[in-house]
Amino acid sequence: MNIRPATTDDAAACARIYAPYVTDTLVSFETEPPTAEEMASRIESSLAEHAWLVLETECETGPEVVGYAYATQHRTRAAYRWACDVSIYLDQERRGKGAGKALYAALFPILKERGYRRALAGIALPNEASIGIHRSFGFTDVGTYKNIGWKFDAWHDVAWMQLDL
Image 1 (cartoon, rainbow, N blue to C red):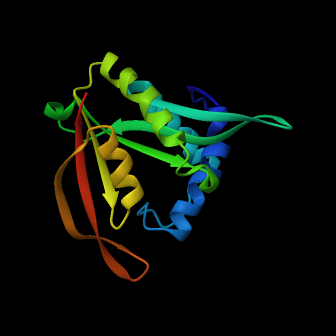
Image 2 (image 1 turned 180 degrees about the vertical axis):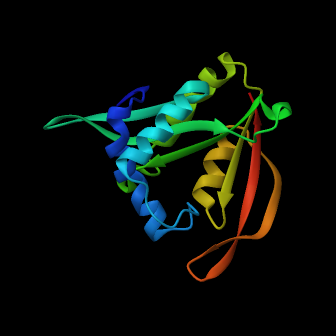
């Protein structure tokens, strides 16, 4: 496995990885998967101030992106400028095999070096796997937004967790 900074050339792979989370799960509250062009824009935006990393494995045809982690702005007010939101997305067959931990282990030092003090994660519930990985890095519970997201014809909660970088 190789972890490296993303480029806009990785947008199609990131969009492919993300699409099932949008269409088939509550993990993302988006309802339409972003296009490769939209994902490229997101990558550029994240890289400008935060970080976006991809995880590659070697395949018969060469390196293949199988996961990514990134940080984005937490809120727009200036007082929040030292905090960021973080997320991980993996190919479904990569889940539970250490890939997410490897991505976060690479991402958090970059964010700390860039001056960020807090990383926050919003986790649509239920999602024990995501809660588990965040707790394994020392994230603590902040609170839960009750019935905040409407998807699949039902209301869903979002737990917020925080890590001091």
